[in-house]
Image 1 (cartoon, rainbow, N blue to C red):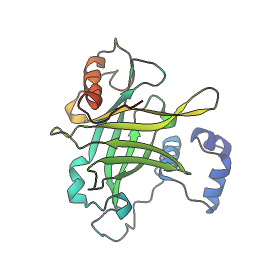
Image 2: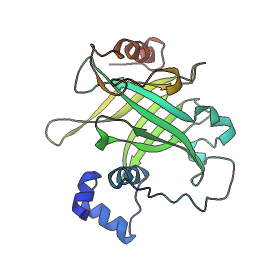
Image 3: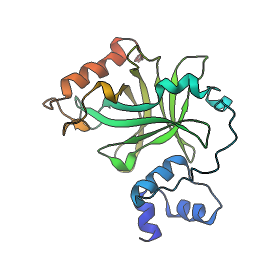
Image 4: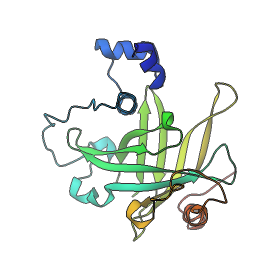
Length: 223
């Protein structure tokens, strides 16, 4: 595979790829995840972890692993479909402790638009009690703000991202979002993930879950 082809499949510029390969610029986590997906090869070195401090960086809330162990796991993730009003977009989010980095990280999978799969770090400051899933790549951010988890460990909140607009234009967009522990729902069916229209078998249940983000006051809309 040529470098140009690899850059196109991983959705990065050829210049960024070449600078990273030459050692003049590091890959971001999101880029590494996409490259791993394209190459079907693990690229992250899991050897030589950083010294064990027991705490995440202060910029992420200084949380300890025992205090956040409850959030680790696989989640069914639901949000409105941007390009198909009334439909729901479903995919999987994995939250896990990164031993080498010393903090929680998240990664997405089973997205119908796999090219836009996200990965990043998890911030959990005590000050607000909210959980932040942050993607940071070359100065561009995508942010999920989640309220306190329910007794069932379900989390609801707001997604702020960029939506593909006319041509190559990117438009700021926001919507409610829900993360449900995967062991609480059935994801074995053919329509468990992807774009779900109203006639999909899982739609009604997913709709009830997603609506809780607003009806239970986990996020608010203002105009």
